[in-house]
Image (cartoon, rainbow, N blue to C red; front, side, top):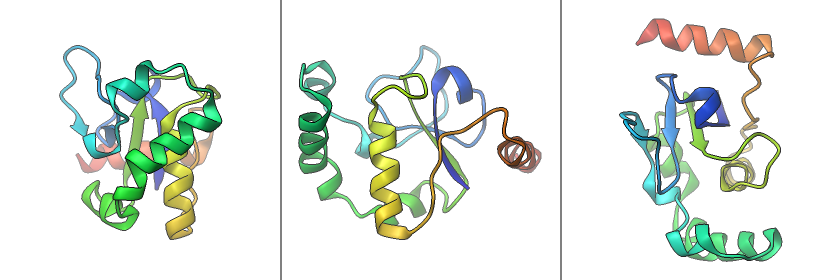
Length: 127
């Protein structure tokens, strides 16, 4: 299963992968810096539609989603950034990009969803 979430919700999980430039102090988890927007993009005042176009051109269009997925562990990871669920963020842009290329559905992690809870517990047992 591939999911997205934020540091507040899932940073403690072994399958968490940071896909942003900055990470929480003390972060020891995995990182996929290739998916991170530049600091200039992070600080920009672009509206979401324009931001997405720039992000795709500067980052995603230069990457192969299949290679990224394989490099992150196949189908067992959670892509993290800072924003709360429902806020505009690049992790959901990455998810849509991966979905379009692979057909794999990549939802936002829902701690109340039994399927997600069971997957997290199963993955923790493997660690």
